[in-house]
Amino acid sequence: MNLQSHLLFRIAAVALACLLADSVYVLQKSHRQTLQTIQTTAESLGRQLEFQLLRIDAGFGQPRTFPDFSLWKETAGVPGLCIRFEPADNTAVKSLCNGAKLSPHGSPESFASLYRALFAPGLEIARPVAFKGRIQGTLAVSSSAEMDIAQAWSDVRNLLGLSALTILAVCLPVYLSVNRALRPAGVIVAGLETLREGNLAHRLPMFEPREWAQTAAAINQLAAAQQQLLAERQKLAVQLIDLQEQERRDLARELHDEFGQCLAAINAVAASIIHTAERECPELIEEATRIVRISEHMMTHVRSLLGSLRPAEFDELGLAASLNSMIAGWNKHGAGKIRYESNISGDCGTLPEPQAIALFRIAQECLTNSAKHSAANHVEVTLTVAEERATLTVRDDGIADTLPFPEGPGIGLLGIRERVAALQGQLTLSIAEPHGLKIEVVLPMPRAAEPSCAAMAASAAGSFSPWRES
Image (cartoon, rainbow, N blue to C red; front, side):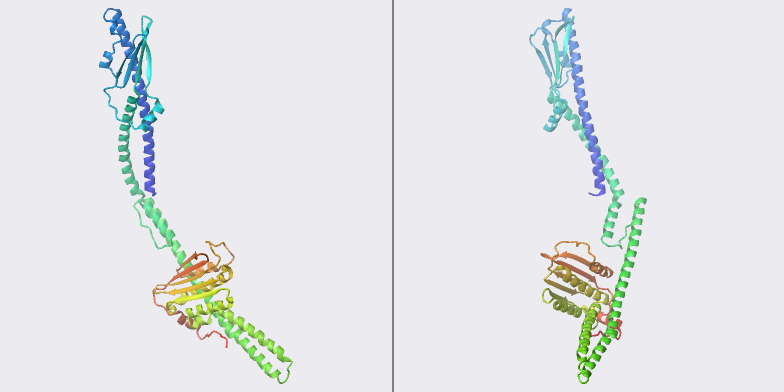
């Protein structure tokens, strides 16, 4: 329910409450009028009967005509009233009802039941008729319950009709005025929802009321500040990621050029020692062989570090070859306990270097997390490169069955989010069927044509050639 409808509902509720109060007042007033009419009729008719007795006693009337109700019926008969005279000597009771003048409208049964419960219609008032200090009889005046209900319903119905017209006449202009005054509220709420969804470029229009205009201006300023802050944050994230990759590239170059060459030299010297010791000092062969084994172990470890820092295939063959090589390495490392698969479609050479590196690092982090935490039997990596976007999906059949994950000490997922946000992409985590984790990353392709990842990497690396096993 929007603000305008809610306000209109409250106005109508107040109007209905006032209508209910008026209805109760009208019913009470109708009941009091009926009671007053009965009392007035009883008093007036009682005096008429006493006057008739005075005329009979003075010889101006006949006793057999007493009591005579004709004068009351002709002059002051009230519709719905019944009168009854009971003589003191217990002779014949005479009664008369007057209800022909009122044609009651049928009232609802619910209203009739409510009125009976509240006011007990059909009241009767008795008055003694006395002459010369003696009670000649008792006069009783009563109302018809049906006629009381019909009269009350007629009064309430007239009030309801008038009130309905009044409510309509009041609520319609109020609604139109309020709707016009509060229309900016709906626009502001919709704008805030748009900003909450991440579209910080959205701006609210300027409204006519000064208060709404000030509100819209404040929201626009806040959105502009947040947009600038987000842009600076994304720029900083890109720079940090680029710096991290540059440091990895430099470290890989140092390991290759310095440490790798030194190990190769140690291995060559040890081989020379073995060759010389075979002729001159056989006792040194075992020690020299041990040096060769240690250097080969260190070389294997250095190759592993180089693969983690900067895969050799990435600079020479591109993203697809690097992913396939990494999948093959995980299959070899897993020794058949976890089966890794890769499905790559599209031309990875069209990917700029930031997107290509980000996709490789995200896949690398996802595979590491699956191996450590998922207890999966099968992990599938799917990369689709299209004209406008690149989509990476990593799915496993592990133990994950609910989201979100509990907070942990690791920063793997946080790092993935930062990489995706820096490149203005989208990250989606969901539970695979029937269980397991599915991570989907969508990175948009830049509009302007850029060199391929392999070309940019080769240009950045210069003459550097990753050290490989001979």
